Length: 310
Image (cartoon, rainbow, N blue to C red):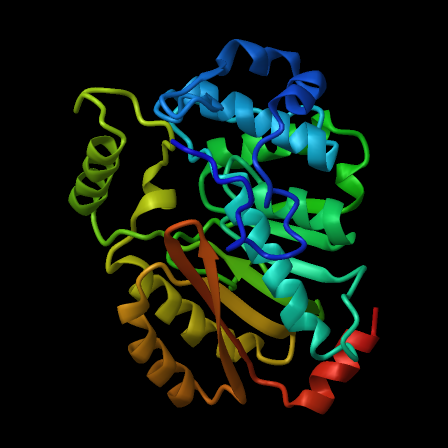
């Protein structure tokens, strides 16, 4: 995998726009040294087909850029690409700044739906902007792993707390408590519509990496992380329906949308739900096009008042 000298498609504030500085990363996290070699393009790189190498790279990135000294996830859980996850946080900050007189907002409250074992969005958002996060999670093992990361890094518990979602069919119910207020909701929803579809997607990634079909997967992922009945369109549609109940408790609801063909139906659902404003924020990460959809039931004066109450 060839790294471009400058990943121009990433957000301007993204710390990962440049080529990986492996000497600096190794200085921060010495175990990375064993994973770095010169690739077919003559560049230093890691083997992105090796799950252990990808995990070690993530540990180095989180330690070097975000002062996360201890980060580990159980085998088989999603190992997220840090640069792309950071992009969502930075683009969300820009969206919130529009209701904050153009200033990047600090000291906000954010709800991460399905924080996973990796807890990546709260880690980056807390370190970059000082936002306070509540992370919800339906999987007990994932929640234990995420809580272990928080406990292993002094100070994180001041900005990140987790809540277990006991009802797998619910999203906000049972997580947002009475009288709580959030400035934003973020979500990386399950992408696939079935276990079979998730396996096919994994096999495509294996082929794209030029691996044997029985090779271990570098990205991992559990059922709740990879698929749900109806896929991301069904999941986000449930988010939209439930968000009506919490319309006055959250300023902006947002979710990643991997398949742009799902957008028209989601836009229609938001119109029917009575959203006052709907935004689609496009992001580009290398050759991959990504985006998130954002909606609010508050008009701009109300959003500005909420952003001012911190």
